[in-house]
Length: 583
Image 1 (cartoon, rainbow, N blue to C red):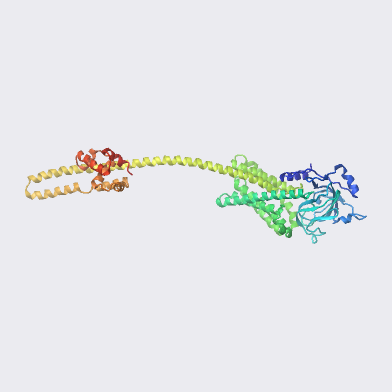
Image 2 (cartoon, rainbow, N blue to C red):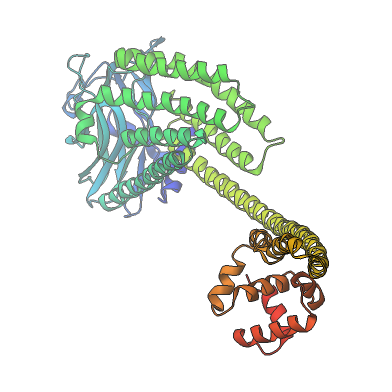
């Protein structure tokens, strides 16, 4: 099967259009009767509403002649220069052993058979051509103005659907066309003929499919640019968004969607240059994206060189006339081919030792590179089909989405594991802090208890001295009694001074807020009862407290009983537990 048939089937399947019948066109060198004899072996008739004629195959070709149907009605009607394939570039044709140039004008002539007189329609898709079409001598469709030179020729972007009424039986088709704008002349895609309803449906399906793809690509461009705005360290988001935007721009220019058609028809050259510039910028964005994902694979100086060359080609595209651009682009393609082969090689290598995220991106890059290679064949007229680069990007987007999902899932999983580790560490740290705090408090309490025991010993010694001095004062003369009384008074003041408050200040530092909380809950407690509470909070027994207070144990017990009643507690044993739990 010839490449153009295969690609046409591919397009129709993608757009869900069922191709039911093909017409093989019969080419002759004389009258309709002679042509009909040549067609006899492969006659295809269009009569059903679902049948589509694919206007391709062999056609009469009249080089450097812009002929109309009336020219073939004369007795000495012009003879065909050659029998050529359609669609095809006439740069590949040879007439009298001379290869034709891309710039020029010509006429095609062929026939098809119709077994119906229902309204039918003709569908033509192309760009940068000027053409006129007659069916059975009646003008049906045209775009631009086919001229005999660059001055008279007016090129146009072509997405045409025109209705006509066929004749039952043989129908003549005459096509004028001219190209003075780019390297290749001729048509890129076959024409479609069928019932108007079916042709309109095909056109609608194409527009819906392309609008859907364009919407997806633009959404992905915006999505990745927003991701980059939220995380500026991930440059891959920026370059993938830029790549998606440039391809969306190119699709909007080349597609059947007629958003820009009125403007494009008035600015054909600029429109073609913009489409080519978008292709250059897409390739540069791809290199930058690849470097962002695989910085260890692609050398920085190669990335910079390729990007600068792509930008230089963009500048050249807008400076030079379009014809020179269309000729020069075929030389520039060698540079892009080398760059893409290098990326293809690096992508294959990246599959070993890479994460699932990077392997998915690698598959997307390979798919995109294959679509790019296929489109290069279309651009160079090696195969004939509509452009497919945007479909390659959609495939890339799918794998990029899978990769982002995998990366996000992996990040969530790692965050969950890290959260669990941090929770365990926090619990262990909390236990350690509580243990250290408890040890510190116990150490300070032991220190405070030691100081208080030392003070208690000193107090006991002072009382012994006081008692002895009292006895001496009773047995001595009056003159010495005054001095001794002064010493006793000094010792007594020391014993009953508020020096112990210093120790309770340290207690407050060890148990901050204890006295405030106790006073708030029990405002009727006296100062001595607050001190007793402090001793109980330190988990001291009645004997130890009695020693510090220089009283009998019974006095301590009675004091606790009085305090319990003030605090509305049921038993003396509840006091200590209550104070130990107070915060």
